[in-house]
Image (cartoon, rainbow, N blue to C red; front, side, top):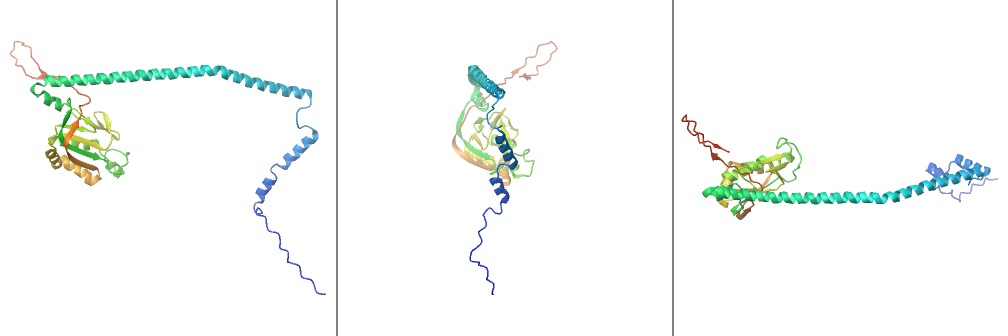
Length: 307
């Protein structure tokens, strides 16, 4: 009798999508460990689960609840009592800060007023004691505003120049060599004076014969006032002649070398009208001939002055 072939018409069931994640499936299906589940079932069977049934346990639970309520009540009462005190202290601090700020603003306003008054008196002293050259002395000392034709020279750092770095052009990196330094502005100003400028200002800061251009870290100071690039130098004088003389001078060629070598940006233009303010601070110095006392020895007066 021939053997029947197996019936393969019914396909095997498809595999579960999570068949390869048996560990995760087990954790999801049995979130509670079997030991914990067995202990919980045993406590339910013993009747030890739920509220205490003995009087002692009930009294202990009630005492704990009363103590917790007492602690919460005392904390709330203390917070309510201390809240007005804290608010009062905070308001007192705010009032003190406002008062001190107002006092500081008042003092600062008085300082500005006194500084303006001192500057005005200094300018008057220069004009009064300058003799027939009082106007020229006041002009050179920066005691009077100046307006007239001149030149405008703008000097700026090279593009994409990092503001950090070491000393002036002491490193080989472009971030250091492409920056304008205090000595660069010194040469520019000295070149303009030598070329015939009558008055000069940098970023609105009037220069005098006693002005100082220095460096403090990465900043350039003019009379102890920090400046930021671009540096706009305004010079009063014969604009066309002044610009030509400066460009032909050694300092003008130095500025051109900075532009060609380090890509420092510069531009000069002749202006029909340039306005310069007065110097923010003046130093008045006077000298008088020293009269030597007659000692009878026939000593001649040296004529040296004292300041």
